[in-house]
Length: 115
Image (cartoon, rainbow, N blue to C red; front, side):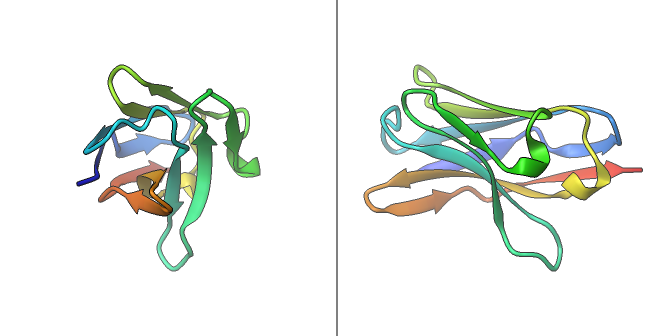
């Protein structure tokens, strides 16, 4: 079955950086779109960034120029480099993959940015 396991979250001061990782298993997702979502308390889940199998990327306007998504086909892994973090980036971040007509999510990793 599809499993997505995120890591790399934590507490960081505003202006700091974090790198999230997602280990995927259950299938090879090299041809699938993968992405990162986040959900802050009291808010709806939103897509932060996505990447196609060919490497085309897309970002939420609020994170453009600060976040960078990448992937490793060899490792079946997804990454999110987050720089210049802001308190409003505080949320649970989820790895996701589109597979067999549905979207699968991981359990999430907490990112907290203090001011």
